[in-house]
Amino acid sequence: RYTAGAISSIAYQQKSPIVDGNVIRVFSRVYSIQCDPKASSVEKFLWNEADRWAQHIQPGDVNQGIMELGASLCSKTSPMCGSCPLQQQCSAFQSDPSSVES
Image 1 (cartoon, helix red, strand yellow):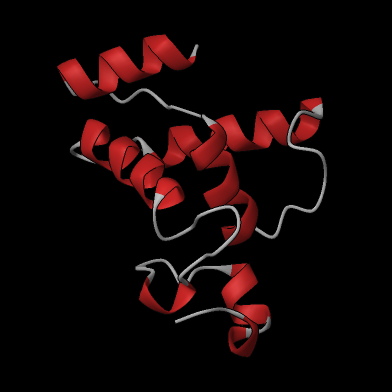
Image 2 (cartoon, rainbow, N blue to C red):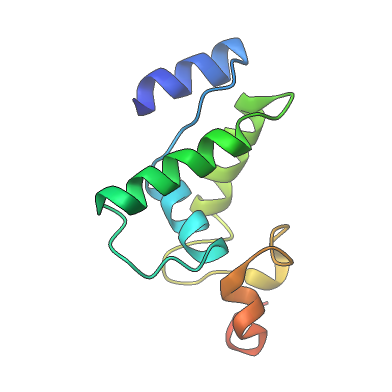
C-alpha cells in the first residue's frame, strides 16, 4: 500500500496516501495519538488522515514533505518543534511548548 501510494502520488501526482514510520511519528504528535500505531483502529485513522492530506493539489509534494518533516524536524529523539511549520496544529507542541526544543 505504501509503495503504491508513493509511486502514484510522487511520480504521477495522484491523490494517494503514504504512511511510513515518519508519517506515523508526525501524525502521532500532531493528533496526540498515545496508542500503538499498529492497532487496527489507529492504523485506519492514520491512513484516513494521510488520505485527507493527500487531497492537496500537489499530493506527491505533501506526502514527501510530511515524510521529510518526520525524518528531520520531528525526529524520534530530538524534535525541533520550535522550527516546525505544523506547531500551531500540533497537539504535542500545544500541550507543553516549554518542553520541546527550539
